[in-house]
Length: 242
Length: 127
Image (cartoon, rainbow over all chains, first blue to last red; front, side, top):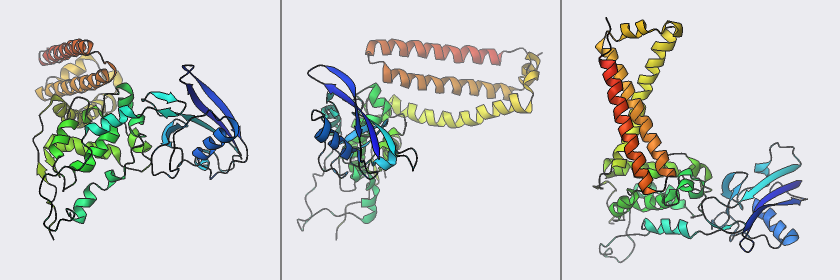
């Protein structure tokens, strides 16, 4: 089948942006959007710049805005973008994720995103002595299951950059940072819950979430992001982490 | 085999206005659902919209229960809407000085609207 791609380009040298139109033949419905972008770069225009690494939905490098919705280019198949099953042509629009400064073409500056990520203390905090056997701190299966969903985050920024509150004000820590906070707040082995909740309680913390649910739809790992944010809000409201 | 304690800890985060506003939006939304649906049901469905005259309102406000109902509806509708507008303004206005000015102007407007409207409902002559 044939694919018509419209890719948002940006040149830092020229300081201008434009739409690049490309047509690809012999496209397989099982090709990913990343495959098509590779073909453009390798066969038509070597200047097209994009970020990718594993190409299998694990590293989270290639989050993009594909046909108006955030997704990983490597996990989005052409078949999913066809309007009808029998279509022999598909139109695809690719843009960089919104809300972060564009460096070149589809590559954005992730530093503001990681700054928010670091602000929620996304690491294990426990100053107690290590167990007598010198091995790992154990927890029950129920305790582990409590935060299982938020351990799946790959920091691709698809959620944060799909959030209208983040678009409106980049100071908002954003869904991804709250997901990371949730992962440790509800971990029975961790002792930094109060410190993280106080950070989430700040002006640009969880209260900036307007429950638009864009983050939940955008997450390529299918994390229930809005639900995780709501659980942090409830912990702040009730004063109980349970 | 020692396992870490089950998560059920109590915390005492700093109480912020936003915490209260968050709960208020949910609670007032729930209350409004019943008050507003009841209002529409009474005014537009059980009674024909063409019969909604000043006399109809006067008859209804003969009862202090209905006056209280309408004052509650007024209070929750205005304050719920005010908080929503405040959220939107906070999202899009990044100038702190301008936001503070708008915040106070809006607050005065809301308090005045609730007070004068509640006064009008409470003192409406029904005779």
